[in-house]
Amino acid sequence: MRGKKNSLRVALIVSELRTGGMEKLVVHLAKGLFSKQIQTLVICLQEPGDLADELTDTGVNITALHSFSGKDIPAVWKLGRILRAFAPSIINAHDYASVPYVVPASRLFWRVPVLFTAHGLLYLGFEPLQKRYRLFSKFFSGISAVSDAVKQRHTQYLNWKKTVQIIPNGVPECKKDRRLRENIRQELHVKETDTLFLSVGNPRPEKGFEDLIQAVAILKHRHDHSNVFKVVVAGRLKDDSYCRMLMEKTKQEKVEDCMLFLGFRSDTPALYNGADVFVLSSRSEGLPMVILESMMAGLPVVATRVGGIPQMMGDNGILVEPGDPEVLADAMQLCLQDKEKRDTIAQKGKALVESRYSMDRMVDSYIQLYSDLS
Image (cartoon, rainbow, N blue to C red; front, side, top):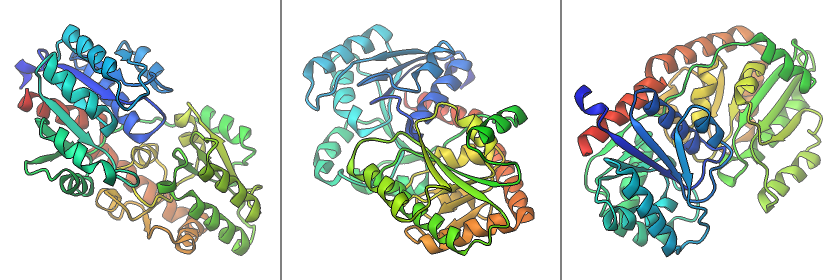
């Protein structure tokens, strides 16, 4: 394989490099490929997105089609011309929205293998498009998935009869930085003796943030105030019904003093440094990058038992059932009251991620798959 690495030319395609787990993986993958001297081009169907600067700062080439229509034939031609100029040996599509562009462009302009990478569990809105994507999937050379649960879901959804390669997400190292910790806690008005819970994710129904709000209300009601806590959520807030509901619920539950939605943050490493515990309340997930990142940062994790999380975490974190604020509050309370257990979980989680979910390991797995398919 080593003799073939440098000859690989990889086109990674995604709708936009927004602040999400899938998009973070594309950024990590592109940077990892580039570090191994593999020619890499990232193509965004819409705009480059908030995470694009991470790529341009490291020299990875990125281009955008600025296409926002579901049936944009000129964009297919534009993508085809980009592919013809770049001459990839493989195309790796990372979301379903890119598939109707990638498949015809790859067939018309540059007949190269198309690998589709499945990230999530298709929470809402995908069933009406099933026939469409099953048709396009006939032109895939392969499918990879970030976890076994994701593999099973997409195999059924696409009626895929061939092998699906599981490549778990990988994350870079996150070093402890006392200065970052002090700055974040000062910004958020959190004392060093307080406990800061962090959650990261763009508010959408599958993220279950209403359950987290309810859990915070329960914890606030039962807490004896001997250990002050605050919960912060980092993720882009939209002016939609779900986000409006979350804001209203924080008022109704009277948790505005101890729970804060920060909106989009580009400084997640600083937030990981500033936090004491990571909490995830999702009702649907694949293999969340944020859990891996928080464990790599040395944080204990409280997460819901969904998707690939139980298989990945094992007993290296605290797992609770989704949609149950009471048990989520119990787990958070345990973290508040038992610092020794919290530290033990954090140490085990970090060791697990370093051994199984490093970025280098993930990138090498993709390189091997690219080489096998091209």
